[in-house]
Image (cartoon, rainbow, N blue to C red; front, side):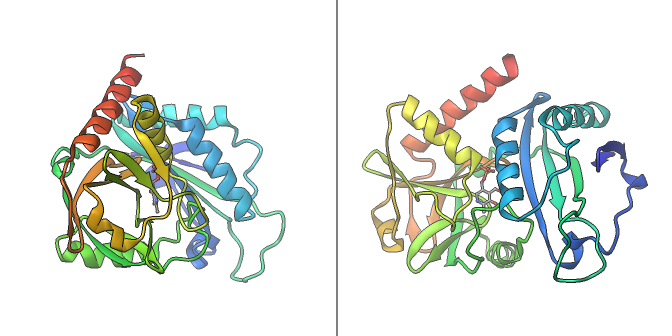
Length: 280
Ligand SMILES: Cc1ncc(COP(=O)(O)O)c(C=O)c1O
């Protein structure tokens, strides 16, 4: 297995990381996940833009060598060396190495890691999966793609033990997102999704689905969704780079068509877009 560390692609067993890395001591890290289809990087530019924004928001200065062309070459090299044309590229950046202290100096050199994981087949989940609903106990900067994922890992692990695929989060009765995906509802042929705010991640797949919906002539309403409104929703689905579009059969006690008609239409348009990407 080959991975990337601070500018170089190398065998994984040659990687050493310091226990003084602030990603380890303080959980100070940001990340991206990019889907690779047939060796092609899907929406890489959008993911890099979001990473750069996360870095600015978290006061992490990305090094000069970390240009878009450098990243692209490194990913291509990882795909080739690992023979993983169907995969997820994980790109993680921590603030860097410093002996434990809350206060960090201004000129820190971030630690940057990239690695590939083979893609999973989601055809079973595309038939519909159950989700739980829980209070959103995350911080108030969920718009930043941070590696500090403990609220989500706790909630999702507990729900998984009870047979749920995902946990939909709510803050003061308003739905924010899933622990690792954005949420869409369908009511009377209108696609409804929570508006962007500091409480939700601006998902790259969310944006792509909104674009597809507009192309398909589907009415879209970006507005807050109250939990009690779930009883009026006919379809619900979640979106993420890894799992793409997954219909929910229920959230807690609220049940939905899975996959519903409009969801199936959007999934089909998504699949067509990926087919085009593979063929270009
Ligand atoms: C909390 C959260 N929301 C939404 C998403 C979906 O984002 P994207 O479509 O960019 O993968 C993710 C992805 O990991 C996530 O962790």
